[in-house]
Length: 317
Ligand code: 13P
Ligand code: SF4
Image 1 (tube, rainbow, N blue to C red):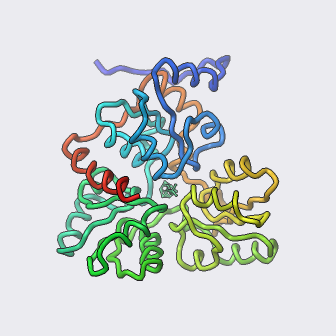
Image 2: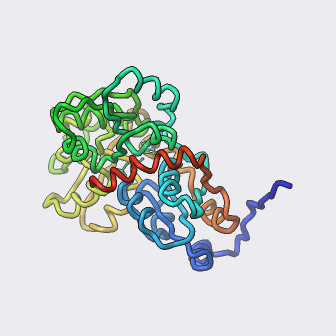
């Protein structure tokens, strides 16, 4: 018999209290990415970038990991904790980068480039990780490439923009898989320049998933944690932030005295919000803890093969 769960929530419940109660009862930890809704960030035990979240998942004592982020992040937590329950509020919370790199096509691509080390950005499926030698995130990609011998040919996948940025920073010629993030490719160079004219003192800070014509205007480029830290230490008082707008919640919280301006997308839309990340809601977070589903399940053989490149990354970071 298939278990069914009611998605009805008693309107009298205080979801913050209920989630806190369930967390204790389950011995769970809630890990959240900066691109989650402010409510979710406020209730999380840890908020971080992909590397920070993977590190937390690798070291937590909690029995259950509740992942408020996207599928590849929860999958990474499961690979690091095959015997723990990993819950994701909405299994449809995917990622355009992961979707654009199917494992069978990637295997054929690798076969066409013999002798190359395969570095894959953590934004990919477990099956793609299993085909890779080293995983990286936006905060350690440059350093990982720099740790490899200069004459070592490298495949970098799946983000062409991060790959190009790493190639420029390291002076290395990387073979790039042509994937991209739908959110970070939405920013308009023209509107960014117009904003800069409007706020001439503001620094432009950008995530390396942005396109090169946007990155060339940036005063600082970094992962979400890198951007957040930069805004705390920079002498400047205003910033144009070129990444998913969820990060502004922590920026504003840490420095209420500073001004944070989200960079505008090309179209008149909320396209600078990741449609996958934003599938998670406080209600779904509560339901997934109450019902202990949806849970991340992985093919054990793929998970075992995917573990090694993740562990290499953690050791090299
Ligand atoms: P980081 O948090 O590692 O900078 O990555 C951003 C991102 O797009 C996550 O999907
Ligand atoms: Fe993927 Fe882009 Fe969303 Fe990050 S912001 S999860 S890279 S689609």
